[in-house]
Each structure stands twice: as structure tokens, then as C-alpha cells.
Length: 224
Image 1: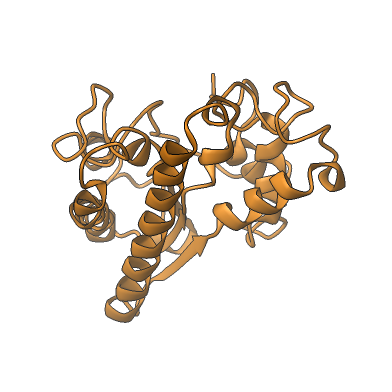
Image 2: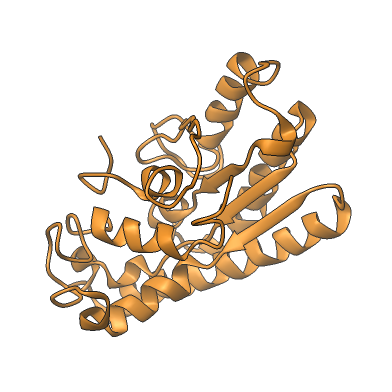
């Protein structure tokens, strides 16, 4: 299953919005952070996921650097589990250093095409709306700061790895626009929960939103 209670963006991207037969290997873990030693968590983190990839897929002949894209959407839980810390921003450099070291693991395995997705405005999720405004403000600021540092990390990668392509997809801007104008995108409003709504539950986007996100990713509709 998925947090969307249906097909998520990966499923839509490789089926509905793809012109070819394509294999998708999804190692994502529900509730994961980048590195549990930085942001405490009991779920298998991105570090563990990369170990799994290194063990089972790195030397596999079933994929080729020229025809494979490595997509990662992570960071939501890193913020959710740390934004109320005394100094949450102090963890972001370490989180992102670990994040990009995992990309180097993929690079060393031969990966050359990457897509990263930034953190959406989950401050506007239903479960957050009844919190104290100051708490919500802290959450929002943490997302913005994390996304800014992620963007800088992508620029640094692009400058130092000219033999790769790396795209940073701005899920924050897309979801902000959809939340501002839900009716324009076919949703009832920006607070309801259900498959015809933006939210699948009180925190996670619905399958309908995931479909919209997939359709807006620049690779959608092209041959992957």
C-alpha cells in the first residue's frame, strides 16, 4: 500500500504518464528519515535503503546508467520529527550531507540521472491547521529553510558532477498553488479528506494529488 491509499506519483509516472514499458524499483520506506543517527526514528532510513540497493542492485545487469533515473522524495519526516527542537536548523547541514553521500553511493554504482523532490507545504495539512499559530510558523520556516539548503546542495552537485543530470522538482510550489486554488484543479476544497480531495488522511496527499504531481513532472509523457 501507499500513504495515498492508492496509486502514488511513482506509479502514475511509470504507467499513465509514460510511453514505454518501464520497470520501477521502489525502495522507499513509510515514515523514513534520511539518517536515523541525525533525526531519531525507528523506521529504516535512507542510509539503510542505500545499503539495500548496494547489496541487491548495484552490480545488477538489469539496469543501465543511460536508461535509468533515480528519484528520491524525502525530508518530510526529517522536518516533522525535528522542527520543535531548540535549534532544528542546526541539523539540516548534517542531514543534507548524509543525503548527498547516499547519492554518491548511487553514483559509484553507475547512476547518472537523478531527480530529487523538495518538501511540500505540509504545514497546511489538516492535522496541522488546529495547532498553535507559532508552532505552525516554526514548521513552515523549517520547510522553507530545508528546501533552500536542498536547492543549494543540488547546485553544488551539478557544478561538481558534470557527467550527470540532476533535476530538483518543486513540489512545494505545485502544492501551494493547488491548496490556494483547489477548485481550479478539481478538488472540493483544501481541507477535505478522501480520494476526491487533496488529502488522503490528515497529513498525506491523496492519490488524486499524486496523479496531478506526476503529470507536472517534466519527464511525464516522455520516453524514460
